[in-house]
Length: 210
Image 1: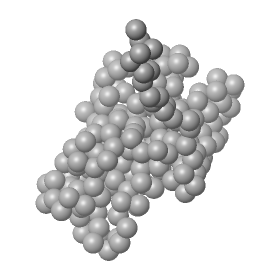
Image 2: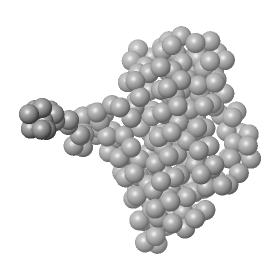
Image 3: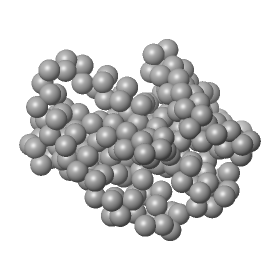
Image 4: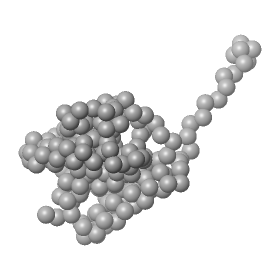
């Protein structure tokens, strides 16, 4: 099993764990855990494969579904032992985002050979599962949090793409990119890193519009 394949399984498992943790916060039953874990674990990769026009990864290999279900059952019994589950969810999401941003970029490059496509597929793979999780669980969306999120996914995808096109060996490029993405997202969670946000301005007085 090469590093990219390992990142695939790791990304699915970690995102599935965040979905199951979201289910625990809503006090769902075991089926609810499995459902949210499955949607979160496979959502980003499913969108990526549909965009690329390739066979959906979990349809070709049902082990991914088994991984999601196994993680959901584990979290169902272990979640009561975790005191700060939302904080753990965010850090696991950061790890999943880092892994999936690189995996998505690698698959985008393999399918298209385009750096732009690799950036897009890396970003979509890394973020869409978390968005689905938050919508289904009724949690505040990670996209609406003030710290950087999508930017971290773009960093991971961008670093991998540049390194790969520069001829860096695949495993080395992947490790560097995963580390970069996780550091950016981790810095956002730990230190509140943000990028400038849009600020609305007061409207012009009515007399100035005449």
